[in-house]
Image (cartoon, rainbow, N blue to C red):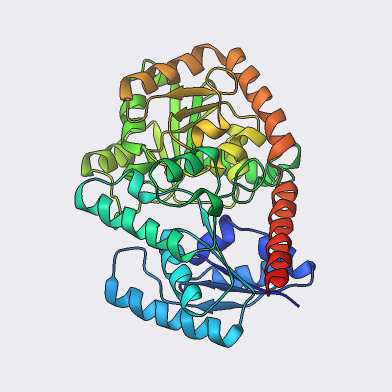
Length: 388
């Protein structure tokens, strides 16, 4: 029975980003172990995936002493478990997991690249983060960027040789669950609850953003664009995500505007994102960096029109004025104009959303991505056995 270890820095990544993948491998007869830092989500994930979880005390910050300790703990875990494949996601888990797996002699070491903090970093921190990426790739046997844009960036920067790099299918880490993100599958009680939290006026235009409320997600530009727009008194901006002030914090002014403005609604989080998307008129994804953003796949599956920044990942999904509107990253003025355009040209936005839905159904269903992923596991395992 082949053994697979899947690793993310924090458990919520196992729950949200990789949902169903561990259970899929188990159903195919594999032994699977999940690894991440501790967190309240772990019992729920173990139950949902049907596989055990092991805690390694990762941090998301740069903490050299703790990181070395985590490498040692991972090394001992790998020597004990003797996995056939170690597959990491998220930057810190990738770096420490690939180093430890290489030290432990694991033959197949895969890192999925789904965004790169170094792309948005500046100064000395950018150099540190770029070196961390290089160390991750050097210790991995396979690098799987989850978008064509990320693959090109990695190769252009010389971070990794071409022979290590592969995209699974057309991209995405886990596709989109078309059974969940489906207008015909919505539950009335959750729709009512979402409506009560937004409290829209009868004719309000609902602008939705989904994700952590941090600077890198473009939240400051979005708030500025919304408040400067001509439609501010005929719209509501709904920010579905929690503040994270320990890493990449928003400015005090932006937090004050979000908290105090009567037409901005902030909701920490919910498992019923699809219901908010069903109530919204447009999704704005103003992020400064991405790998292959799940939120765009989810909005597309819900046939919700999209406005997004012109970054890697977003441009792998959205085609300008064909399947959505794209604005220059961090450009408040053009974002404002795009929001106003979406308000006036609703029919045109709906046509773009319909075209995006067809593409998502064809290429990005969760079942298709998970089949591709498992097929590649088997391919690598067969190749490793033949080389022995």
